[in-house]
Each structure stands twice: as C-alpha cells, then as structure tokens.
Image (cartoon, rainbow, N blue to C red; front, side):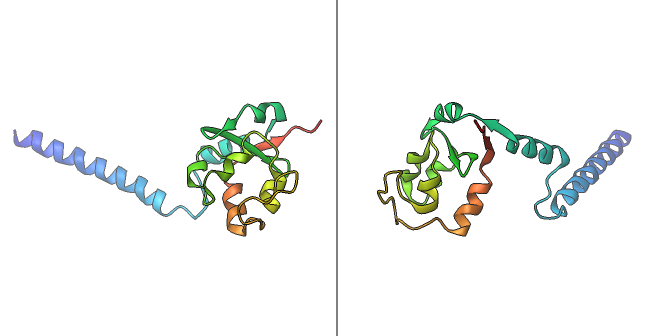
Length: 136
C-alpha cells in the first residue's frame, strides 16, 4: 500500500512538472509570437484570394464578409461588438471601402459620424483579414 502511494505521488509530481513547463513556455513567449503551426495557418489564410461573387454570399449579420481596399475581412464575430451597432451590417457581402474610409455610402450618404474610422479601428480590422480579392 505504501509503495503504491509513493508511486502515485511521484507520477503526480512528474505531471505537475510537465504542466508547469508548458505553462512557463506559454507565459514567457514574446508578445505577438504564436505557436509555429498557428503562424503558418494565419499566414495561409491571409494569402487566400476570393472573388466578389464569393464575398457576396456572406452578406448577413450571422455570416459577414467584406472587402476594404482589396482585402477580404470576416466580420462575423465582430458584428455584435461593433461600436456603431448594426451599421456594420451594411458592409456585409460588398466592397465597403468607401463606407469604412469615409463613413459614407457609395452614393455619398453619411453613415454614423461621417468621419473616417480611427487608427484603432484600422488595427482591429487588420486582425479580421482572411485574404485578398481576386483581380480580374
């Protein structure tokens, strides 16, 4: 019985040491550095090309892609967090370059504040990039 207890304690200590080493690695990873496989996946996704027809199929609040300056973004998870509420849904499935850069519709109607998005908004957008639009 005593021998079994010692073996169990030893195994538990080894497991704790292994888990601790993994946590140490995660905690001490430099900022912006992802595990190697994650970097490759992100880079591959951002290098994908999409047609406007494909983007147009993602035109709802629950499935929202948009194009801004030739880049394709998946806004689906951001829609409910957008500070301007549902105004972002206008961008779903279309080239929303004008809408994003000047907050006006293609025909010049102001949307929201009517001022360009902030640097913070541009940085948030960059995190949502999934690819580029195919050139004709």
